Length: 230
Ligand code: MGP
Image (cartoon, rainbow, N blue to C red; front, top):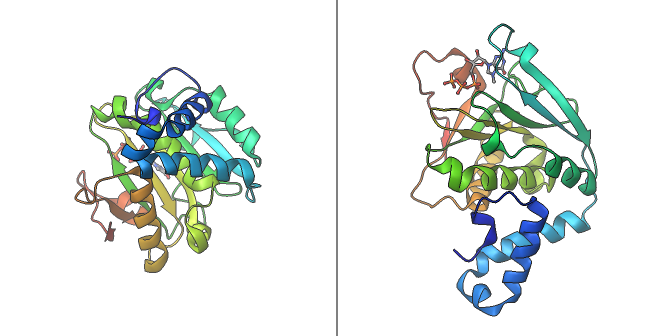
């Protein structure tokens, strides 16, 4: 692998991106993996140049069975600048170091990371389910890429439909999802799904699904039916 972003290291993400830039500058890596490396650099440049238009809130969930689900959910902090995003990101634990049962959620300010919020009630999520092995290889970089998609407004005119994103660290297999506001907005959902899959570098033959929260909340078995696929 020529990209630095595919290996999990203890270094802060910022250093990893700086390493990526150095590798891009070395022409061999540039020729071998132009798209992947360019995408990293484009992400970085757009984050540095863009003023964040939205205020975001990062939440943490810790599974304490003596409390209700909602009581286990805590706001960590809010930010509305690129600098504060990186300061927060570099300050907190990587997802792969969290205990099983924990979640991070990044949501637009004013939207609570739960099905019950007015902006989520009729919404759903693009769900990325990871194998146990992918915790080591993919989890942290997928989550960072998800965060960059959100704060960088990667979904063009459809970014308005995005409510937030959630990462569930689970022994049975981790999950990452982007939540959108309206499970009937086919145009927005399909655009977001297509861009998201591409940004994560999920191979075309791997299918990802979009499910409504209503279905997820009332499911009886272990799987929820897909409303859309990408
Ligand atoms: P989970 O944490 O989203 O997934 O939901 P997990 O742990 O992988 O479990 P699975 O059922 O998907 O296999 C676990 C449980 O947390 C749900 O069954 C709900 O009881 C509760 N829960 C999760 N969410 C996202 C919400 C929510 O938005 N509102 C409320 N009230 N409960 C929720």
